[in-house]
Image (tube, rainbow, N blue to C red; front, side, top):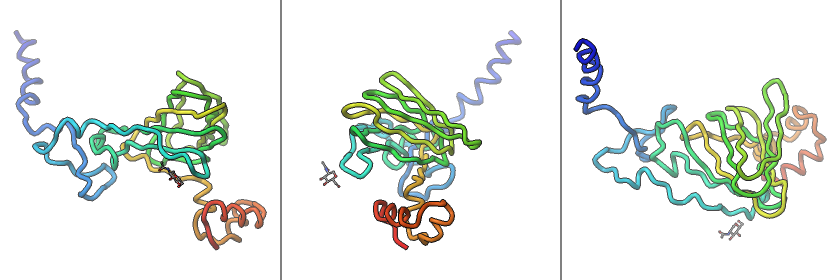
Length: 208
Ligand SMILES: *[C@@H]1O[C@H](CO)[C@@H](O)[C@H](O)[C@H]1NC(C)=O
């Protein structure tokens, strides 16, 4: 009897509390802050707020021969506040997802097709690299530089999950060569040859 009263004392407050927040589908018209977007009105929600139907191959006709199809909070408002998101990655033969990092999330890759050489570099500069194939999963801890390349024949496809609805991304080549940071400063701070800096600025759309 005492045990039942004890249980009820725990259960009743939550089951009677109508304001408990089961979910917070993003209202993308609201302002995003570090904890996400404000919630859409629960009365306006349908099952389609919790379904994403476009995890299809993106356009890989680009310099990297790769495409990321995100289902992050901006594309899939249902993941707002839930601490995760998903993307699809396609890399054509010879393609590369260059060195980059996600300041807001750890990443997990699940290989669906093809061969992908993937790796990350820890903050003490230890290197962790492996060629992965269908059924393999690898993790890239939050904030660390990492990359993926297609190491086989034909297209490679993978599913990525992130420990944030909005992982953010910084691509090293674009940070160094895709903006107007003075080429002399880039050369000085990277120890690269100035001619190589100019060449890479040409590839990545930088100036200066
Ligand atoms: C893919 O991107 C290329 C280069 O931007 C473009 O020419 C092509 O039309 C795009 N293909 C599709 C199917 O959108």
